[in-house]
Image (tube, rainbow, N blue to C red; front, side):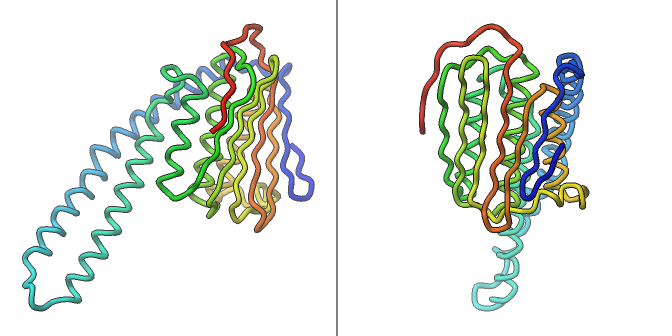
Length: 247
């Protein structure tokens, strides 16, 4: 992996790594853990917070209408915080559920992810160009996972208002770009402070790209937004039906 200026780039060695078995094992382990965490969060902390919301509303109804304005205001603030927390927990639960790839396919699954951005006021333009090749399960999961991580980072850390997401297919080549107009960052800090959540996510994207022999490039500068690009040639020799669309 090479970092030059504001660019972080990595090319995996597809000949040295056999991704299929390894990614299948990683995928199974992750899905089992995601399912377990989703159930625990849903049945535990999410339900407790929803119960707290009902209790706050009940307490507010007991306050005399003629006074205690300050207490009523404080309870309303707590209620808003809990409502925001419950929404975030529901998003986390949704992210932890099994990937929709097998049911929807790559393009539809990615489109489903972009809908989450609108809930945070982030406009997303999603373009699909070319003929979708028949990807191996490892390539499909890796592409989806990297796009998912990029969109999660945008939503949580970038402060962006606009996102451009492209999936381009030409022959057996797959190119993906996720670009935002957010605050940006210095990619070199990926190595100087790997403990930060954003950097852990970027390192995971790099490792995932390496497993399918893909090239991952991350361009960013403070105040200039971020672009995440993934490119690889599929090892599958078949092609899926043509799909060209723009939204």
